[in-house]
Image 1: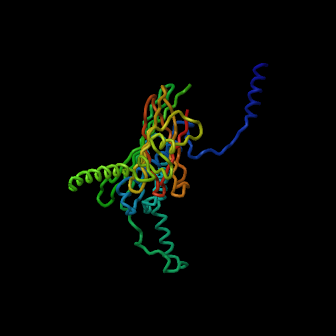
Image 2: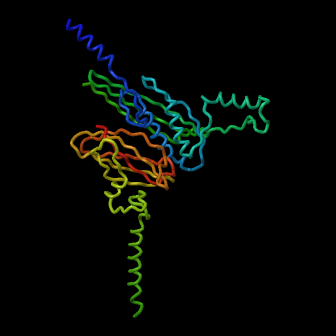
Image 3: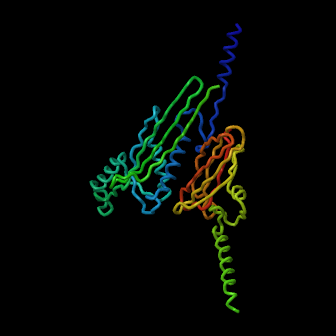
Length: 189
Length: 144
């Protein structure tokens, strides 16, 4: 009988548990789990963009044209590396010292639009873009993210290393490279 | 007789110019390379006080030294954070960038978490995201 009352009481309490939703600080430190999170993404993007701005290629003020290539995810978890490179690109673009050429993933859309303008009779010929006008990138940006995970009964330690490189497409020289390391440790109890 | 004064005059000019050079080493409106505007900054302590802000939960971590330089047309900052307690401390920090008109020159940065060992110092470095940023504040918040 007592067990039944206890079970009913717990069920009633669980039913009454009020759910609340609040807006939070999108740029606050997030430590819900030790998986790759928003703070890691923001820290990496900010650190890489600022470091790249400090390199001679960018500081020269020649508005280098860069294309974004893949950041390979070599960790065991799913990470949207495109979100990282998008943030880096936004920060650099806003800084006004770099221009970005259309990258491989957006090339189909770019070509489709050029074709659409050329082939459609609805566009004025003088405003429709011509073939062969796109600007080729001088530099390409690519990188890797790797992780080392160690775990025992009470502790889980995750180490992330994000490496980004800026390669000169013409001569194949590595113009800039930097890394950001992050360590997160979760302990139980 | 008059010629004996020449070395004295030359010496005096050299001393004065030497002093002038030393005084003029720092541009007006700057202290330790950092922009200070009209503020009176006579020491590193004054500069740290002027440039550091605590938000949210207060931390015992203190900035003890801030130095600035120019990386091209961007301000570059080195700030030394000190944990003089006997325990490991966790803090988060960010820089706030200010333009010539005293308004935000860039969107709010993300908080960056940092761990400091007991009785230790850590140097945090930042480069301004834009040349419109002519001043800054270092913001600290406890993560304990």
